[in-house]
Image (cartoon, rainbow, N blue to C red; front, side, top):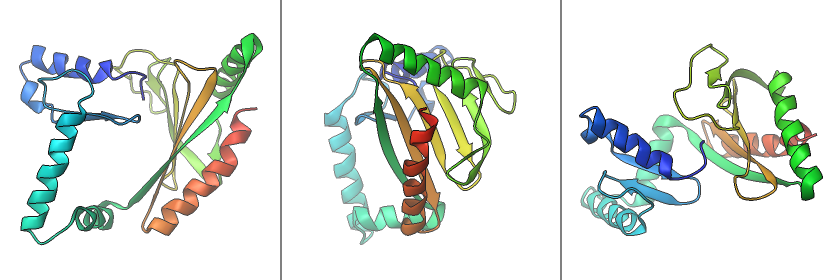
Length: 194
């Protein structure tokens, strides 16, 4: 959950250096940047549009729509819903408050969020996970909490605005189950910002 599309290009460069450029297939980011193949190192909407057209054509030959294909993936892997919450902090005091919130979350990792037990976390600034694994990405002020109930909460200050962003993810066997988890997370996360 690092800020900036440049990190996808960095991964392509690393794979090229190791002689494995063909291992890179597809990269994307939250703000609608997509990149397939290693010939462009920035967001490419033209390429993404072409991929959608190819998918639609391939599935049409199988008698399926893109919605049919997506439903098949949901049936196999579960339903995923995502939500972004923004918490604004104005002025110099706001920046200090944001720092205090991130420090507090690091010092007092939550044991549960929205009734779901936190079964793991990653601190991208310390480059470590709760399991003691090292994170090989560049350091970034990001915290990730993984929940036993299939939920995930990722918290980071914005790189461009005076706000903290919370990325929520809910997984369930049905769409209703994943939406219910997102709703619980949306109600619980504001308490983490205090």
